[in-house]
Amino acid sequence: MGHLMGIEYCQEHVLEVAKNIALAVHKAPQITGKTDVDVEIIWGEDLEPIIEVMGPVAQVMRYVKWDYETIKSCYEKGENPVVVAVGARTARSNLGWDCGACGFDTCKEFNKYAKENRGGGQLGGPSCNWKALDFAIACDWACAAAWQYRVDNRVMGSLGFALNALGFMPHMDAKIGLALGPPRDMVYYSREEMHKSMTYEMDKQDMLNCVPNLFTAFPGGGTPMYKNKDEWWAPPEFMGMAYSPEVMEVMQQVLFEQVPEIVVKHADKIEARYKDKDK
Amino acid sequence: MRKYVEDLDFRGEEYVNEWTPWSPQDIRRKKGALEAARLMLNSAQTAPFAGGVPSVEAHIVYGQEELETIARKMEEIAHQKEQWKEPFLYEAVMVRDSDVILFIGNTRCHETPLDAGCGLCGGGLDCSYFYEQKNQKYGLVDITDRSSKKEIDGPLCTARVSDLGYAVGSALWTAHTLMVDARPFASIGMAGMQLGYCRNSGMVVGVPVAVKSKNPYVDVNVDYHLINMDKVLDNTRKIYQTARIIRGFDYRKWIPKPQKSDEEDE
Image (cartoon, each protein chain N blue to C red):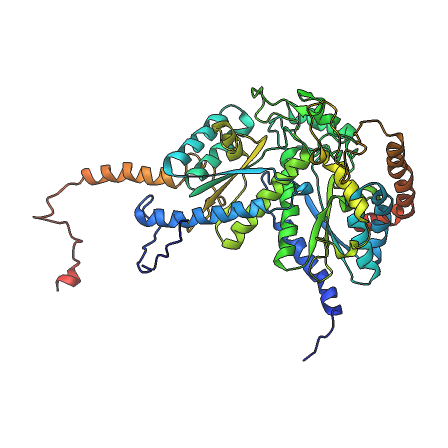
């Protein structure tokens, strides 16, 4: 006998769905049959370091900002979002195929390079591309399983970056995060959380920055004007290219100062969990 | 404007049986597998891709001649590298045992990378690992020289390769949902590339599809290229004929019967 009311029991159930998704990740078919794949589920207060480390990156990367603001807002409202972390060992090839997809003639040469350069990228790497395919199939099965249970979700490289930086899944080379729930429509698509966070001018400027040739005027002169306002010819404006020390400095600050500061605060606690697990 | 003419002649019957191979009843069964492959391809196209960028192309291949050509190409590749010999030969048998082959390729991984500096290809903080090894100007990769000593002309943008993995994953998810048998294979993909399937792609995965009583892609025995259903059946044709001719008789006049025991005679 019982009577469930309200939304809270659904929010709690997202965690059970995450466990079902973990099963699907482990069941995902592989091309090589030799790729180690792991999955972890993170929720509640343990999301706080992840949200915190995404914060500074969000200031310089628009797509990270969207992910960061959405997860943070859901968490702060007590909607209990859950992160399904998927990782795989992709930086070593035990295939011996020597196929060349990685850029080396042999797997042996790749393994030597990978040993010296492991984990240098924002999302890991270097990668054996066949193992990367296995990893991606597993990630896709996480997404597909989530859709099967009709829980809003989105697979996020931004979460992968945070997991990497904080030392989650230390034995895995490539990591990605699937944000899951809360139980309502359109959390991670057409994001309501982001309403009113941008002005019309900011949105328009993004389009000008990101899709410039849409706004190009007659190119026959060799230096086209840009149609960046209604009366774009009065006076005409032109786009230029330049190294931006400001942009680079901010990026450097974020990646090499702000992120490490946050990581130092949390890394020991996270590392200890894996040490306890290994005992 | 042409109008849709509704076909209301809705009656009929279809007999379906996987035996004998390539008979009308078997081809009807295969048509179901073809429909499943088409739905798998739809799923591949809606998989999550980095930045939502379209980068997947596909070929659906079916027919006895077509599958035989793919299997023979795999056998050809098998003998080029010792480490590929067994898997490629075993998997060629699986191709012959399939109903449909779905090739899924990524058209951007070798030419138009994600350019996000993710590091997945070479482990750095930019895309230099990829571009420094490519024939390129201003970041535009020249792919017109298609000769390559390697099976895959790497390096590839691993973020795009991951997109391919998501596409293959979604196709396989739909196969599981439809309860048709399917698995992803590197060997079939490489053979497909050499045969010109998904020719705009830098990497191709082959996904054979089958709807048979026994899943062709699991539970294989050793020396599968020598010991498999086709070989066993052919050997039966070889052995049984000879077994007949060594004991011939005119069945209209006399057929040997089991000898009756003494008790039966009474």
